[in-house]
Length: 113
Image 1 (cartoon, helix red, strand yellow):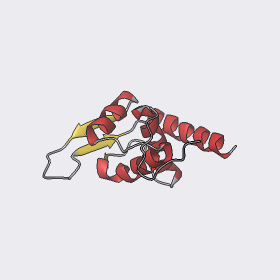
Image 2 (cartoon, one colour):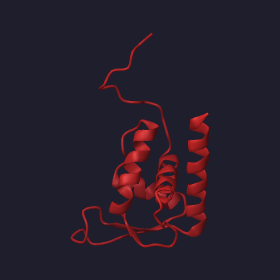
Image 3 (cartoon, helix red, strand yellow):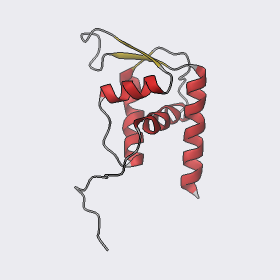
């Protein structure tokens, strides 16, 4: 049996959409309001980092994160780079927020059993 090494990386493929859905659901599970808020990408990066850690993968780049957000239905706009280090603003419609919340709840319930 091969034992994992500290420096081994997980090569399992997890879609960026699943990571983003988990991150947005976890953001809401912490009591933060997501739906219809104009949030800077910086506010969501902590949830994204925790989601990547949960799935055992490296954190996606800003561009991958933004592309996945758009694919799941969020509206993303770029702001000038002098405004923020991660120059994007995100608005999640209520449907996307509800889908992320449901995904997070299902994932955490499945991981408990």
